[in-house]
Image (cartoon, rainbow, N blue to C red; front, top):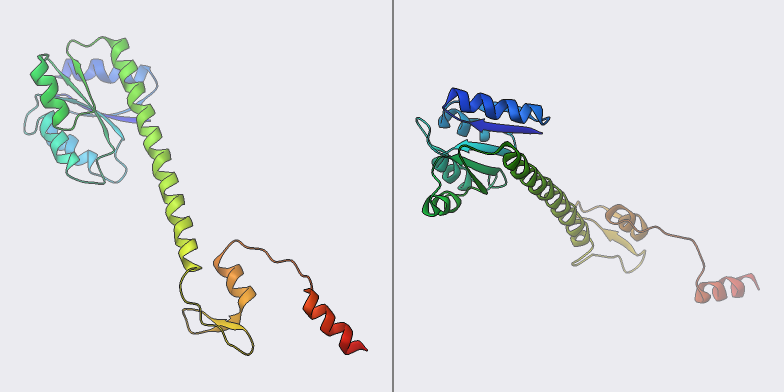
Length: 197
């Protein structure tokens, strides 16, 4: 799992990066907010970011606001890391769109636990998104078998959306997961037997 960190203080950034690498994470590190924000807007951006509140050009709270305005980036899990520890600061950070908040100097084990929570949430969001796509595909298949279906009153062929006439059996197999078994209904069986006589 890749984690993006944005911290303008070199020592703090190195400590943070070394801790995350030691715990087995791949780290993408930035020293200013603009670069971090641009990296988080790329297609293959990390799904978890640890952002320092106070940075040059663009601070962590501004990055949160920017990302939360884009529906495609709202699932990025953001942990704000800052020396600001007052309740109103915590509230401001969370209202800006941060998912979690850690004050400096941070306890490495607390950071590790919060990163693990964030990654669990990212994983659950990914699974939920996958399930939603499966559901949309299923609903799309179901809609194909709804509505008006033109059928010939003589040969019983049906007309598809491309104005092509085909056997109803072929149409159903093509537009659903239904399987057919062969049998003879009682009325047809009676006709067959009477024709033989």
